[in-house]
Image (tube, rainbow, N blue to C red; front, top):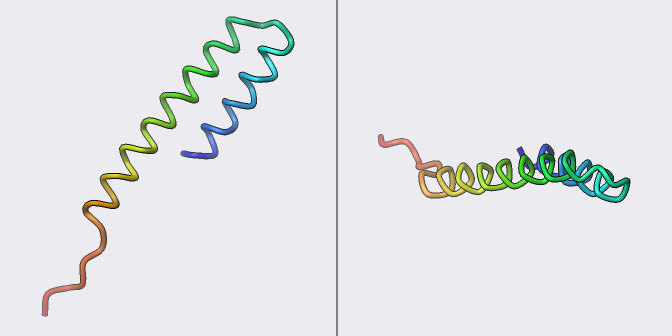
Length: 55
């Protein structure tokens, strides 16, 4: 998930440098959504965690 965020962020930076503002905005929005989704899933997995089995 985090690799998708970095990929779309790089695409947004390159598109912005080349003047494609629509593509850059869309790629930046997708990167933002992926990052927020990554944070939410990370927090859920951190809170639930792995607990030792009950014997």
